[in-house]
Length: 314
Image 1 (cartoon, rainbow, N blue to C red):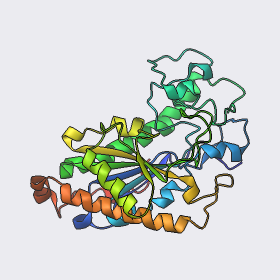
Image 2: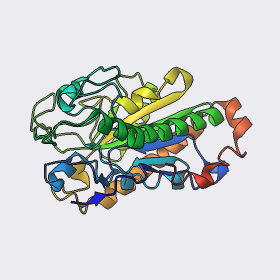
Image 3: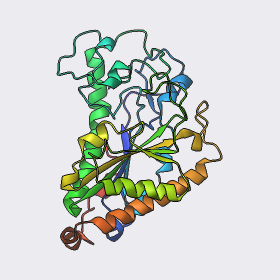
Image 4: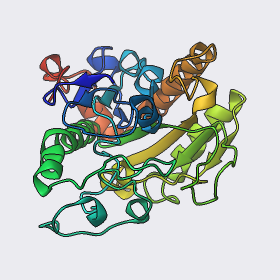
């Protein structure tokens, strides 16, 4: 098992590399591609089985974002340790050795064992042979979840402040077929891409349609809000009425990796190139849709003056 000391940077943040004039108010985040497993995880399932929860290599698929004017933030920790795409209220009481001291609003995800801290894998296997203490979960929140959310929130808010609008893309991958915990039951084949905007509530319908069309033009099968609508990261920081747009993108793992070994296969390079084309299209879309008065005010000035020391924001 690839075990990492419990204290390590919870994420990496790569700002735009293009220079001020070519920056765009676009933030990509990959919350589930982390592969650094903390030493205190204490899982009982084999490491390779535990890794099936990862959106492995998603950060690599989107690696061109900073070269195209956008920011890229990616978690280093695994989602099965603590899931950055869940609400802090999504506490699984069945996993704890004492009552949670704060408010709780368990979702359908928690009922399935995949809430803020996972109790089960999507195979139904238990991750632990014991219950976790309140202090353990609180530490996972303070050391990993909260810093990740702060990084995403700050990047979105800074871009919005300078440009008057921001487009946030929440990046994921999905198994080729549904599992036993999927709403539609096991064995259902997934599309190439699924876009989620929580039924039109987290970004403008025009942006969702633009991304869908860009992918379809490259020959991909794209579905919208079926079966993935988006969860916490698109919900928490979006406000389309204020020009804060968040869209979740799920890509089918069969397009780029072996789901058992987690290794990239021959399809990775083509998918990476096509996602890079999509990123460039999103950057152009954002550039064309910056509010005119904000663009005139900020373009070419020092709106990224602090990025030089944020490459490894912790």
